[in-house]
Length: 149
Image 1: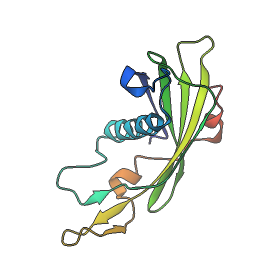
Image 2: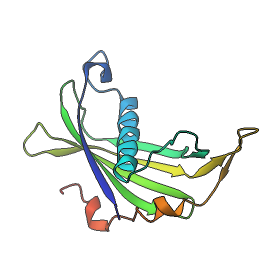
Image 3: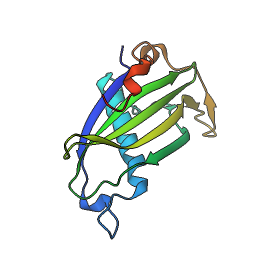
Image 4: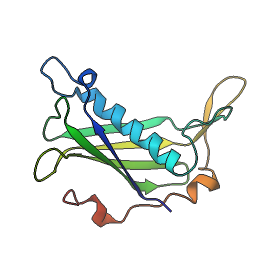
């Protein structure tokens, strides 16, 4: 069972603003990319072709400590904070790697709800997380949320 996932990315020029600092909105794009990679690591997809299953975002936040700049190397660590019957809450820890020592620069939260989309009207309804997915995911131990790790 998986409770964490890490992905390393380099900040691209297109991720930055006029000052060369990564725009705040891109932290959310990075969080979503890591979530998708996490699902792929479990052998599934966040959006399987032909599936009515979906994972809309019901809450997102991010606290920023230090800026990321063009060409910075950043590790984004996904931790499963909560797993409920119909939803998952993730914590994302952003660590700048091209400094010594590596340090946390941001921390975000993303809450997603498992839904099924009605084929006729497109209306979404919350459903239990499918067993095949729920059985692969567990809540991370509390000590993993320590930014020094």
